[in-house]
Amino acid sequence: MKDLKMRNHTTRLASLYPYIKGLPGRGNQLPLTIAFITLTVLLASLLIHQILLFFALSYYSIILVNYLFSRSRRELINFRRLNGVTVVESVLTSLGLMSAYLTYLGGVWVIIASIIFSSLTALATMIRGLIVRVLSGDNLAYSIKYSLTITTIQVFSFSFINLENIKTSMIAGQLIGNATYIIYSSILDIFLKVKGLKPIELLSAMLAIFLNGVKEPLEKLAGKLETKSDIKVESLVFRETTSNKISIALIVPSFHPGPFRDFGSSILPYLIEEKLSRYGIKSVIVKGLSDHSKNIISRRDCEFIADEIVKSIVNHNSNYSRSVGYVKIFKNGPVTTSLVPIGSSTLTLITLHPEGMEDIPYEVMDKINNDELIVIDTHNSFSEDVKELNDRLNDVREALKNISNIHVERNSEILLGYGESNIDGYGLEEGIGPLGIRTIVLKNNGQLSSLVVIDSNNAVPEVREKILAEVKKIKVDYCEVLTTDTHIVNGIKLGGRGYHPLGEVIPLEDIVKSVLRAVKQAIENIKKMEVSKISFTFKDIKVMSNDFLEEAANKTHKSLKLLALTTLITMVTSALLTFALLFLIF
Image (tube, rainbow, N blue to C red; front, side):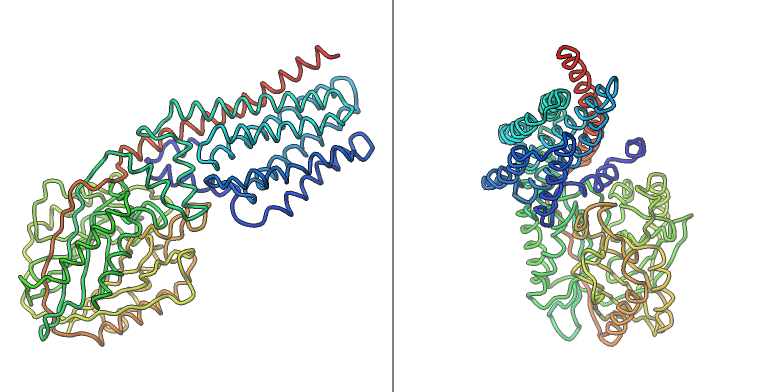
């Protein structure tokens, strides 16, 4: 918790993936549910040394209740997930029943057994209510109805056990657990709203994507946000000198390809690629300067942006240039900047390799006025120790200032080739997106320069090192490795950080083999080309702003602290109530 508090808001939200992993999700829960209910029944029967037929019948009826409530088809509620909730509750109830054997020791052990059983029952009841409220889309009435039904069954079942302390503990635990889950969840929705959005409803909408792949609830909620931003996109379009047909588009956007899965602008690069491919245009989409404050919310906005970009590229027929210059590389402390002069533009590639890299925001360009520069965040060096760049942003800004006034000669004709390949046998779960590997190779007076663009969210440092070494062996003089920072791979497998950077799961030799295949193809396809730059600015696009993310992170942190406190209060209050009731009874 302390570590979570120290990080920035984006990192703190991403750090919650492990908590999501624990929610009832995939898989058939029925056998497990039957098994743990059976364990509860056996422990209860052994507790009083006889088979409790009516206890068993009533307790197994919870499965029927789960089925009937699942028929409502409300939000994330289904039979499997309700059974998952029952499994969690049965585990805690069984632990409580084990402690109940202390009753036979008599004296103070009766009180201790009762307090443990009561506290665990209260905890189980609280968890049940909270999970069902989240799964039902923050429907308090539904969660109360379900929870009270289960409470009634459990209290009725335990009425067959002729141990007053255990019956009293069950009643106290159920009472306190139901009360605290209602109070806690209501406090969240009343006092911890995120930009006016109820946090439980927001969590439910996010889980709809993670668990069901349904985006509409989150789009609807996020559509209520009022933060807007201008989205800039630069594109270099290439066509053969012998033809007026555009064949390649290098696209450098300022939108962030996130926040996760295929929600928001995570899907936008793929929309652009798919629409361009209809016209036979190959697209190479890299990461411009952007962070999570540039996550586009609406699918409609994404479709509009993609359509406008494609329409302009397909119909572009002016300001073409046939000049190119040599690549120049500059070092500024930990920052390596490569300048690739092509046409009237200069591609400006930034890497911190071998140090860790994270998002470089557009703000690093403040007070740097050079329309010739198209700045690319190579995003090619992952480190667990680097969650945000912080002081390194000053180094990046200084590097950009230093090169902003450098004149680069363009004295050769453009000879350019395109190649692509996939890393066979691997996909989103392993951290590689649908665009695979795309390469551009420039030939300048016999020297070869290659940009290797891999559709992944960052890469372990060894990936770049190995690729550069192997590409050099096939006579490529300059090479840079870029990842797209795609977030379509994020949240595919819940738990951990929520995704795998390139090279963490996929073997390095498989990556290099695929890269070499694409680079060789690009070399074979080298043709005389001409290039033109197209600039786009999309005004007032709704985004998940830094303010929203910061508030969400801060209030999530507060909610977790409050949950920990509520859990403690629930168990202690249930214990005290049980003690008081037993004192009155005995």
